[in-house]
Image (cartoon, rainbow, N blue to C red):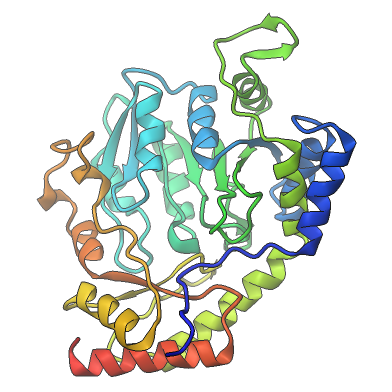
Length: 365
């Protein structure tokens, strides 16, 4: 049988290993010069035009960003239900309440119309997710926020380098979180990076990540230990030099799939949007699970289901929103299947993916 094609594959080379070794030899392993350099280089590389703060995970970055923006108990933050649980978890961890909105069918991102229907006097902000690497409708979302006096917090975990009408994701809201988990478009091994609009929010983030202190032993707030190590930052700095090439490869792979797949709905790209294809997500109207199983069994091609259980149905949040309020979310959860699109794919891999999907879709698998 052909070698298994995994749905995702981290890319770590000799340059990353050498960078780690350099840090180990230096003896400065935590919160040293590598972290500072990574923060500055990340902001410059993606054209964010604002400061960045490195933390130990994307979830930490989201949590600290919300705390630093003043989100607290009694507040509501509007979030999509169709996303990874870290989105709503980060809101709940501040004591605030995540309020679930529906998505739009065309981009899997939060629906501006659904956002408007959920604004109350308790709403503090909106957290759009640039899901799968496609930017949310930020022009409309920012207009809604401005009209209602709300903040915007971008979940850009999957969207390094994505943009809308020339503006990079991460440059719209009060803050934006990028994940650096191993399967993301670039990694630091583990970690997160947060772009911050306001200098005071940035200062608070740096306090919260370091036990609440800017000056040693002079704690200003009750803080956390969510610092990024220099080891992780060194890996991230190397990955920054490679991510553009990997993004182009993802986009080329996605173009081949979209041109050749049949019997399934391929992911559209909005006008003015740059999609970076963290995931290449198709819709399978009937028996998505059966097609995924057959794709692995018959063609040795992996795939992923992101996200079969919407957040509003998870145990901590069940009952907060009626299923009937989120029709596009429920449909996407039943139909979505993410195919391999990562830069390690060969032409033969791509052709096998196409053959498998087309054969199974035609057979009604």
